[in-house]
Image (cartoon, rainbow, N blue to C red):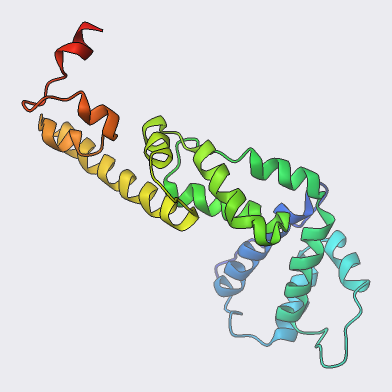
Length: 212
């Protein structure tokens, strides 16, 4: 019978990051060992056996209200989502959020980390506005950033859509460039308005730009 290693227990350090990692790996582990459809009580027993003493101590300190099943894994996991987030130092989490950058990842990967970091910070109604500013500041592409700044009445959802569209267009252009395409009309399509003004009808830069 094939054996699967249980996730690494949660130890010292930032408990929220470890909890997010452990929960994801534990759910995968349950499926791998054929316990994905087990009862909540069985899942909880396996969970407490492998998660480590730090979370066992948290579980022992939990008080459950009438109607809450303290022997059910889903109930306990939902409670730990809240407890682990609160036990992470809020100022550290918020500093991490404001330092989030794309760093070579795709837009979707960048947004995934940004959303995860924002959720842990408990920004409330300010979340989308702060995500918008960190998204723009953290982009790798200066051209993409300029295009966003040139857009009127921009908000988070529209900024995300524009970034995804520009990323896809840039990938297509790179593919054509790799195949030897020199179509300057296509290249000009992703330039900012200011840049397009400096491109002549034949696809060459204007003489004033060349002279500068």
